[in-house]
Amino acid sequence: MVNVIGLGYIGLPTALMMASHGVEVIGTDYNKELVATLNAGRTTFKEEGLDELFNNAVKAGIKFTTEYQVTDTYIVSVPTPYDKFSKKVDACYVVSAIRDVMKVCPKGATVVVESTVSPGTIDRFVRPAVEDAGFVIGKDINLVHAPERIIPGNMVFELLHNNRTIGADDRNIGEKVKALYSSFCQGEIVVTDIRTAEMTKVVENTFRAVNIAFANELAKICRHDNMDVYEIIRICNMHPRVNILQPGPGVGGHCISVDPWFLVGDYPSLAKVIDESMKTNDAMPDFVLNRIYEIMKEKGLSDIGRVGLYGLTYKENVDDMRESPTLQLLESQQRHLASGLKVYDPFIKKDVVANQYHNLDEFIDSVDLVVIMVKHNEIKENVEKLLGKVVLDCHNIIALPEVYHI
Image (tube, rainbow, N blue to C red):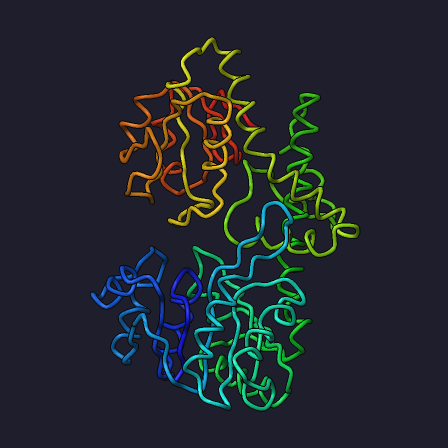
């Protein structure tokens, strides 16, 4: 039996996938309301294919509880934020879960950490927690790191098809965990050591963050001298060895906006490019806010309450708001002692911010300037409703006679 610890955006799909492919799984989470929702037959977030996967897993016998189980295999999939001052990984949730596992696990158990961590985190935090409980690593307890590699909006497909990395102290243990993930994973699974597995996951997301930052910096340069960044990128990408990404209003989610900071925190004198790239991306919501004020001044709009932000999530067609650029922009505006921006997102049904709408037509009717922060399919399919409005398109997706860009 596998006890999956943490039933959030990564742990829940992983548990469901294993259960639906013949693995006996019990999912554990400290959040009683979350566990109650799952036991009532409902998923806790929206994701294409997740409800079907959930139903298959329930039929296969998956169970959900707040209690840690006595078993031979644990998968720890809890959040790993970073300290915003030091930029180092905050491993408190991982350490807490490991300590609770140590209270119930038998000798010989294997503990798999799926949570993304910086290189050396397992050495610095996880091993001491295991040893403090009186276990000898490699004899009483086997440690493995198997970082997730999926993205909201395409989780189910990527769980099935993405390649995976298994880091282990002992090659034989690594192969056993590989066999467990092979129950559902159709991609290539590489077995390596733990520190290499830690580093590869952080490097993957850092690569993406640096490339996004380059596009965002180009947008700022082109805005400064009134050049069309999208046309420039389009032409540059015609070169066979150039593939510049598209700029945007910021970077969110719990991967690209967080993981690269781990390297900055651990290697502050070395990770200079990464540091500047993350600062560039983090500054984009403020850049968008400044563009809003510039456009308001140009168009003679004086009421900030007639400006609407379309999109609250961190990316299109999901309900995930973690590290959302829109939330960052709203926080920045509040620091400037201003308020009144209206907000709407078709995927967010609960009131999470002030002046939030739950109907596209009412939202558009209430504003003069629409700022497209997220490129949900809904707005791309309803472009005609923007006619007569001033539009700041942060993703270059709207084809109207007069549209502003970042």
